[in-house]
Amino acid sequence: MSRLPLLNLIFIQLLFIGCGGKDGTTNIDQESRTPDSEWVEDNATDEDASTIPKVAPFPQSGAAIVPAEPDPVVAQIETIYRPDDTRMQPDEYKLKELGINKYESKRLILFSDIDPDIAKTLPPVIDRAYESLVAYFGPPLPARSGADFQITGYLIKDRDRFVTAGLVPVNLPFFSHGQHRGQEFWMYEQEYDYYRRHLLIHEVTHCFMLIEPGLHPPMWYLEGMAELFATHRTLEDKIEFAVMPEDSKAYIGLSRIEMIQKEIAAGRMLNIDQVTNLGPAEFAASRSIPYAWSWAICKFLDRHPRYQSRFRELGQHLVGREFFRLAETLFEPDKSLLAAEWDQFARGIEYGWEFEANAFEIAGNDPVAFTDSLSIDVTASRSWQSSGRIVEAGVPYTITASRTVTLANAPKPWVSEPQGISIRYANGRPIGRLLVGVLVGDRNQKELIETPFEVHDCGNGDVIRFANRGQLMFSVNDFGSERSDNRGAYQVKVIPPTP
Ligand SMILES: [Zn+2]
Image (tube, rainbow, N blue to C red; front, side, top):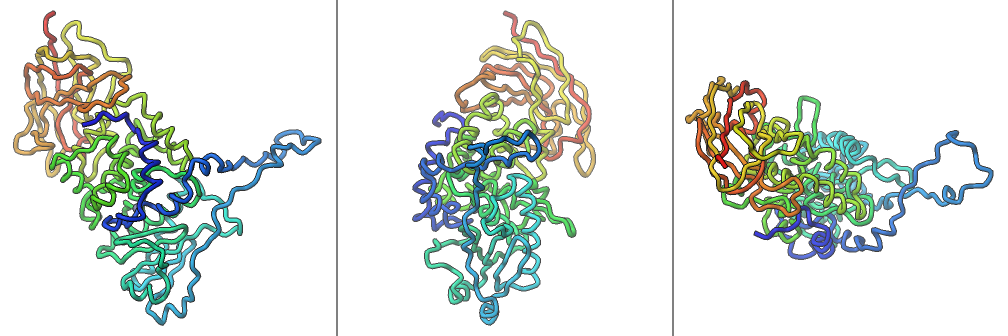
């Protein structure tokens, strides 16, 4: 496996986007090409990125003494508008004769030939999704006309009907699920209610994120964020976006979690560099799997307490080079820890993943070498916890554990000793079993490590020789969705080798 620098995506992604998606993308399951790749190709040149004028802040009225002369800088301020609205304006009465109805809300005009009782529920969903997108990314650029931001979607059951009506432009690339361009998108009717809304929100998210011309973020981010927002939960008359699915029943047709589980089981784990280097070729070749990985990395970074604020900063740079610079630098300080935590998340991903409880607990101070034996408590309600000690590779450490913990799993709580409960397994090991790990590498590790985290089964006690030098960690094995309500702690003693 190559050791690519973490988030080393600038040049590779520029290359992918620049030449992406016109041909050879017809097999993509989700969509036929990169988000607006044709458009990106025409526009995402270096000159465009550097010549995009910045929106200057409005002068504060009454905030300062009025200058005698007009400020030459202020005089040059000009508002940046979004591209003009070039959506088709079809005759809805003629369309009605063809069996295509119009449904409209503030943020969406939807033309569709599907069941009207279903179609009419969709525009209000997009009004809510728009609020969520604005809260995350900020409002879209204003229109020169002053018009509200609105998108037109074509939800197609019978393609011929839409072609006859002139609603499928001849230069629109082939698509098998959805396609978007400017403030318009096209998508086929879906079998499941959940997935119909999901794909609708996915396409709207693309329209929203790509409305401003210029150099756009790479595919893993554009597709991952479209998937992130599209993953929604409906509760009576409420709808929540960007949720972590809690079980498979409410998300029929999605299967992103199952896809990653299958990839892991088949030995196709992707590290962060590999996910952030997914480009049009992979999206074209692997059907929905790159979408699943892109969603997972965005979901992980967006919800993990350690990385959330940094990741959300990326969302403030949807145009220009700054996104790429930040993506490469923001996560530098704890690169090896991030690699290890991603590894744990991806390998253990499941419905209802608890991001806080599964975040590694790292000692505030730098870990130190063993000078004598160590006794610590390992809490059952948290994932991996640092011992505050460094272990050396290849030498024997004697580890013993005692006491009990309560694993608050349904249908009843289980009291476990450090050897675990062998009638229920999580990640291939009995729940409740004491695990020992090594966070490989130093805090200032520059290269991404192939195996960032080394895990050993420990149970009641064992003599363990680690393959790597690194920070010694402990965890009580459990499902990633059932950890937070566990109680108690094991008492663990570590005796280092005598020098
Ligand atoms: Zn997409």
